[in-house]
Length: 256
Image (tube, rainbow, N blue to C red; front, side):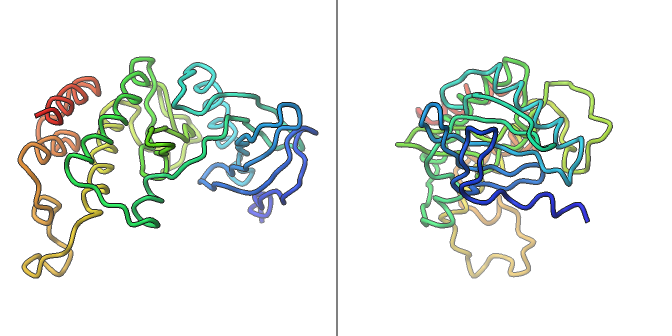
């Protein structure tokens, strides 16, 4: 009976007597994101609302995301603008980043990636992840819907699950908040991220197992260097000591 409170705000709804809702642009397990117009600046902004149906934990996540964005101040992350509570709903106002997510590019626009292109994108992503880790945070949601391209420049969005490295789990956390807050969690996500790109140009071979049991190593015809990188990211073999170490090796492989 609580889910009705998560119905999105209608277009033209006024929030905090300042932000006019234009449309819903994102939905996650713990929040709804609207494209709004700021009556004071005239700018388009992204406004994230904590889901009431998720109770206190959703509000805690939004508070933590607010704190993270305030502390990061990176041009390729959403910028913190404001936060407020209205009618028992908690909101976070961020800069609006337009563009295509990697998910859009692969599944809607049919874009494919070869090994070199995959390495190039991965380097761009790690160049954002390394400073994030160096400031003591892990993203914990490095998936293709959360990587955005604007004029060929990569942006990282949605810090809703991010946590301090080594932070103790929240007592009210659910199974969806299960990843350990350590660099390796983000590196494993990046390994899967690379596989999404490489599978974009995959055509099943008649000799490949038809029951879906073949591994990515068997299905994808990859060079030894990129297979080595992904196996280390996924901790199939010796994992990288840090994201900075991974970036160093991947840059070296890309320059060969």
